[in-house]
Image 1 (cartoon, rainbow, N blue to C red):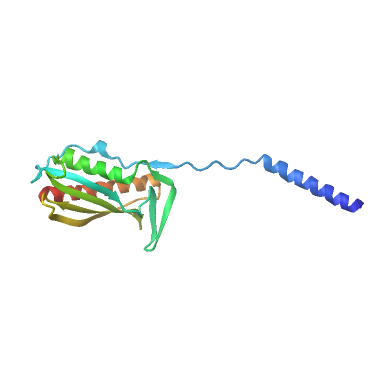
Image 2 (cartoon, helix red, strand yellow):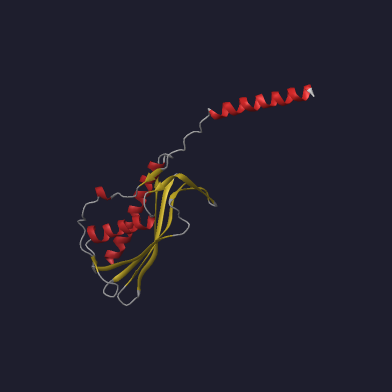
Amino acid sequence: MKIERRRWTLGALALAAVTAACIDLEPDPAPAIRWLSLDARADAEPSELPPPAEPALVLARVTVAESIPDRLVRRISPVEVAYDDLARWNEPLDDALRRALEDELYRRRGFVRRGASSGRTLEVELVTFELAAGQASVAAIARLTDFDGVTVFDRRFETAAVVDGSDAGVIAEGLTDGLRDVVVEIADLAALR
């Protein structure tokens, strides 16, 4: 009986010592989430380009593919992507894309906003927005229809820019430049048609 009591006492003392040591331990603070912005309008000046052939334009649906989350995406291989939980966009990507298109089309290019029945209609879907093999890859599908609903163009616009580094801020800059390039390509074709 005396041996069992000693074991119980030693066990209780060991448990108390471990508990006391754990009470003083504080968990590491959670890593901070980085909020990334795609707003690069500060350096964009009104364009010196000639006015569009047909200035009336309705910017209709602007969407983002369901496979593109609100986090930074890094493509690991052709069949695998990694989502960065600590690097997030500060606004929905479809809002950023719409803002970039409106800025380029209406402010810089001179297109005129019209109601859906009185102008050509442009729809855009962002389908790729990721870092892949050291490049910021951006792709969008744009469809322009005329007043009668006849398709003027329906095509994919894509760009890839080399990103020097793995920092989320550097990648965001590359993706911002890529998004801007795609938006300019869409506006160029819309202005010609």
